[in-house]
Image 1: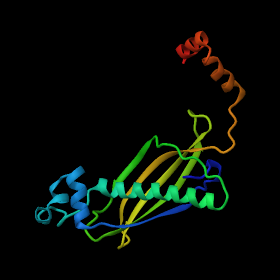
Image 2: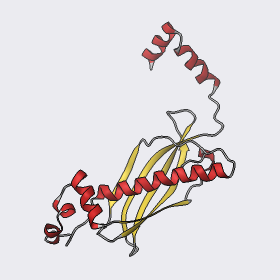
Image 3: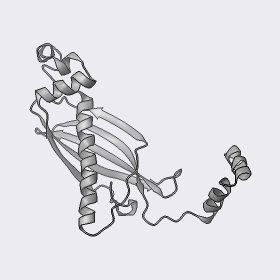
Length: 185
């Protein structure tokens, strides 16, 4: 999120928007990144157990990720518009789970929502917190088509490095001591 770690509320939903998948878009994406017959050939796809053309799961994920990044930028703009300084989002250390629950077909409109399900201060990177997020995608029939549990970093607003860490960091910059400290780590 583009909010400071301290300002993020657990279980708050962030609507990310909707996307309608067209047959042309499904085929174009799959041709480039996932060229399996049920993603690229409408005639062969009719004979598959899916009963027709379906979007690649990676296509569904990519659209959701784009919606999430766009929402981060919009939140940053919103906060600046209110005269507030937005927080700092960091990278993601990973995805804990990912499930493709139902196929996405041409004409389906999928709505994405992000929810922060938990948070804690980082044990390994001072000044940062970890956000545990759930990204859910629902089609126009109310069916969940995709769900993932993601982790991301968010900077703490008023972090002050403890004196012990500041001293150790300064000592690592002294050539001989830096080598000794790095060998012990």
